[in-house]
Image (cartoon, each protein chain N blue to C red):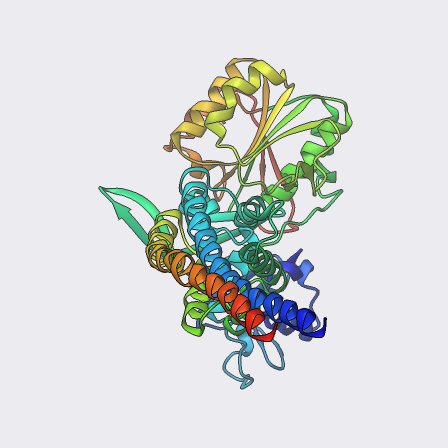
Amino acid sequence: MLKNLLNKNIYQAIVRCGITPESLFEVRLRIGKPLVICGKFGNAVVTENGVCYPSDRKKNTAQPVVAQAEDVEYALSVASGHSVYAVSDSLLKGYISYRGMRIGASGAVVSEGGRVSALKNIASLNIRIPHEVKGCAGEVSYIVDGGLKNILVVSPPGAGKTTLLRELTRLYSEKLYNILLIDERNEIAAVSDGKSILDAGDFTDVMAGAEKKLVYENAVRSMRPDMIVMDELFGEDDAEGICDIARAGVRVMASVHARDTEALKNTPFERMLRFFDFFLVLERPGGKIRVIENKGTKM
Amino acid sequence: MFSLIAGASLFVGSLYGGAGVRHYYKTRAEYFEGLNNLCNLLIDEIVHLKTPLFKILDNFTYMKKDEFSKHVNAFAALLKEEIIANRESVLKILECVWLKKEERVVIADFLMILGRSHSESQAANIGHYKNKFAEIAAKAKEAYKVQGGLAYKLGILLGIALMIVVV
């Protein structure tokens, strides 16, 4: 996947470091700046002689591999099927999806009449590579064994929320529950040409690329799911949607960016917290999952 | 008998030469008309439907065998291979006798902007090239009518004259 997306020189520079590009979490391309990769080792700069970690930067004199404008354009062209205009709405939200990879983009914002109309002169990309880690939910599989529950996965960015959510979805699906996955950023199942690239379970229906609030109502009526799964709740609309789904009697499993559940208090999400049975808090990738059971209306 | 065959051959040769010149002008006129049509299709599909570029190009060339469609197909193949098409490679696929060098440069520049920006910018850029191509297309059409027609008629007349002289 990553081989197709990256310009040959960038891909080869990573491979030369002895790193399997697919094992990385992120690749960051910034025009005129060193190529940065992120893996289990944290962040590192790719140089002509190998990887340079932050602690070695002062000592290491090797020339870093610098991303060029054509490297950014190459990745954008591949990800958009050479049709940047076709993904401009998605770019306005700050990302585009390519085979399950989320490519964050930043550049110059074009606005018109107080409305953001386009993102142009894209200068940096953050390519996030999804990882399917079957078994990563082993320590919390007893929750799945206990039947359908409302579950909220809480973690800061990059700690493995989506991976955990995918695995829990797969485990519920294995128990023959009808799961509806609202995969707004197409990261959980990574649907490409109608097929899921990542395994979210055989009994999971995927609504890919659609905004959550556009899908809730119709999906509850038409797909009759036992559980709705959605990634990265954001803002009041999503919080309201969770309350509506829970009130409708459908179970919900979602994830949200936060340091812990305390950080969600006094935010638009506070109202929805009472609906969740379990909070799974992740602090870092591969770290222990902290389980908080919600036993009352107050946590 | 020999003079009759020689006269007929000269007539056919002259006619063929005239038709060849007319064909040159005809191909140019059709080529630029094709470019104009592609610009219209691109503006519609990109602005209103956001159809992916390769699909637009495929639809445009479907079942067509004219010279412009051949170039469009070659460009699409190049883009699939190189991702960011190299200017020299684009100019190379546009090499042909019916395009002048400066026209090839403009067409290459036009092809190379396709798909590389948001829809408003694409529409503005394609519109700009469309005006250029419309101007060349009008001239090429006129040249086909006047010079192409003239060359064909001259070919016939020259053929007849040569036949009379020889026979």
